[in-house]
Length: 138
Image (cartoon, rainbow, N blue to C red):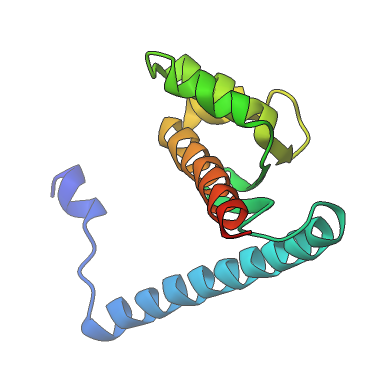
């Protein structure tokens, strides 16, 4: 018997279903934990910063929750005027991140999960668009 044959395990339908149930249960528990953390963070930031979706937002990444706040529109103009390289997005995102407070977090996130920076910059851009829309309505 080869090593490959030894490592392959024949599973019954019941065993597959049991394993899938355990995976789903673990995923549901993790989702519940993340949702609770997100709710606590939103509550804390709502009292400090303002309204979620207008003044701040929370983005879920593989590295955890990231909270961003709207800053000066000058930062958006600088991004629009850039060549939109990876470094430009990182430079754009950094001043907007208010949670976690670790200064190196954005750089580490960009190294491990580069597309997370895109998701965070999208959230920041939406904050500016919402603010511009609400200002225009006044």
